[in-house]
Length: 142
Image (tube, rainbow, N blue to C red; front, side):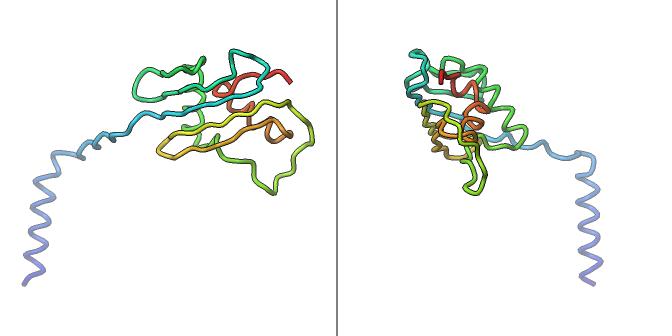
């Protein structure tokens, strides 16, 4: 007796809401990505320093000298599902080549994640990681 009543109720609800179609998704309220990029010993005095990079929520901003292109590069990582801030895996074989004394430290938030990443050019893997993140990180002189 209860089962036919439940089925009738579900059928009525399905029929009355079926014409509305799916409800639109609610917009996610998220703050723009904000990163602090600190660079030392790049070989370019204008590239060394601490810069703020703001991406998302409209126009790229902050004090980063290449904010628009840096945000575009980060968007490419986001679309591909990559994490440009991940460290080199400990078991990865890397060429023993030195890419210069440049170092960088990036902190802040990106794609809802807390970021605290360090970059150097100490070996082939670290050089590749640095170059892959250009123009968030600058071109360097070795």
